[in-house]
Length: 292
Ligand SMILES: CC(C)(COP(=O)(O)OP(=O)(O)OC[C@H]1O[C@@H](n2cnc3c(N)ncnc32)[C@H](O[C@H]2O[C@H](COP(=O)(O)OP(=O)(O)OP(=O)(O)O)[C@@H](O)[C@H]2O)[C@@H]1O)[C@@H](O)C(=O)NCCC(=O)NCCS
Ligand SMILES: Nc1ncnc2[nH]cnc12
Image (cartoon, rainbow, N blue to C red; front, side, top):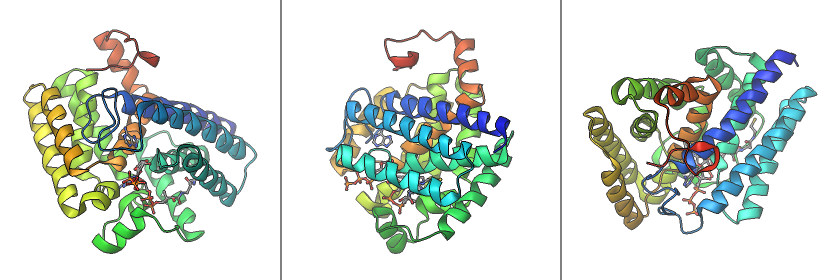
């Protein structure tokens, strides 16, 4: 394995873990676990999600170690599957199932390709995903049921297309959000709003069917419009959270992609640069995350 590619992959892995934390602490988020509540998740809480991110950090170390010794793809897959099983055993539920896969794919694609630009990494990710899915069957899952029932692609199509939600939705959304709101914290919500409009979230579909997905789209559009016109969205997000809890609606796929997007922006130096420019106060949260 090329040493400089490997170093890039190590940096990316570290940034992705940071990104997942940033997603978790972004508050308020409808239906999702955040600093204020557990959203529509009776089986999750903040402490558990924090511990789950630590588990992803350990998983990334194992993955990087395998990449260092040029292990074949089937070994990387086994490490990912092991992390997935370990997560379920430890927490009794799926905390970051999508994130394990997305982070593993991105880190391995970065190590393989040494991609410098998003478009290159997207292409390398698509290529790796194709090899990955050619290796074997995905076990029965909520996502599988949803793909069969609603004909939606979920995380698998997302990966095979080279993560357009990250490279074509979230990255431009961050830059648009910064240009419009001039504030990294608000720009984070801007990314959330765009992802809600674009992602075929199989968690939302599994829980609430097409109506659930349509609801994400509609609320994402409203949020984007509100943020674009400079309105504060906090109160509205809090109301949405109450409604999502009543409907049992959530958006685990959007959450994972948001975390991965924050991580990738961090890796590219775009996130910290904006925060420094704004001189955001370091909060009493690990890593100085911002709670709105
Ligand atoms: C390929 C696999 C990841 C399997 O995917 P599949 O879709 O078949 O399985 P799911 O169980 O549905 O898991 C996919 C998770 O991905 C997230 N997600 C959903 N939609 C999208 C999307 N459009 N784009 C990206 N990501 C998406 C989502 O994860 C989040 O939600 C989780 C909670 O989901 P769920 O368990 O359904 O939740 P509840 O409704 O709460 O369930 P109940 O408690 O009510 O029962 C949460 O964990 C978030 O992370 C989907 O869950 C995979 O199996 C695989 O092959 N893995 C290989 C291992 C690996 O990573 N290898 C290394 C790669 S090199
Ligand atoms: N904040 C969050 N709440 C619920 N599920 C998630 N999966 C990833 N992040 C999540």
